[in-house]
Image 1 (spheres, rainbow, N blue to C red):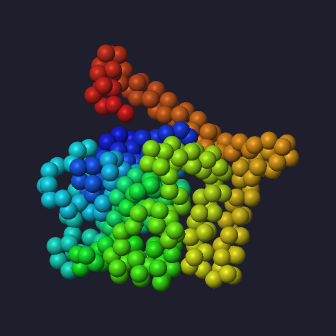
Image 2 (image 1 turned 60 degrees about the horizontal axis):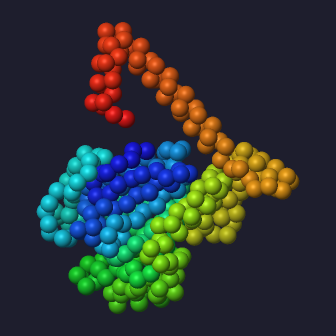
Image 3 (image 1 turned 90 degrees about the vertical axis):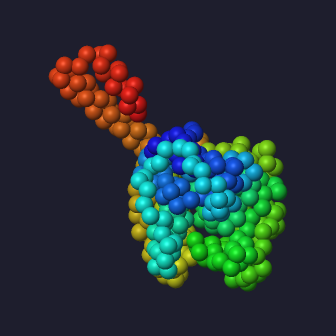
Length: 321
């Protein structure tokens, strides 16, 4: 996947395969715009399809995780290069609002939830409206002590229109969701933990290291089985008992015959820790071999065209990978 500074966020890959995605507009409390959301969707899809990525982490710079949509009114350009071309944002008519929500705003949380790789929200500060819904779409939510979380859309006469009501019902049930949303509550992380919206609350200066420890633990687990299990758990919420049995049996037919399962059994018999994900190393080696072959073909073509080494180096500098 592509790394670097994009529209409203930056991406880096940390060992072993952790995509660290940080919202980087603290002057706007990391508020999101439609272009930022589209670029985030593209980043999530790239992470899903890149074997080098195992876990996704979302966090923010400054005192906010994400304070919802950007309503700062600054009208200043946001730095970073775009990943996708701009399109109309919608919301100009009734049907435009419907289409903007379904295909732009809601698409971000759908992409997070649909990604088979586990995701962690490292909530460093304020997470409200869109920010809270994005965090709820993640598989793990760990917050810094004192972070504030809520969805006070009714203060503006608006709805939690990006799926927050559904995700809250999943996590804490109808009664608590009714109270939380109708009373426009924004709560401290400690109360959010008691409600069941968070997995853990840690000291602010320990948040990044704590999340990295969890991400590394998850990244070193058997990735195929974990991705299948994630999907099965979410599917089970929508299924009957009989349907869930059939669904996980079908997935087990894959995981039981995967090399990770053989390694798990061998490690148990040999009384050692398992070394999962050898298949990912094999895939990386194959990708590297394919890249080298492509690079050699490119060099041969460049020399056929009469370019010398100096010209080739100049091209490489002009068009870096």
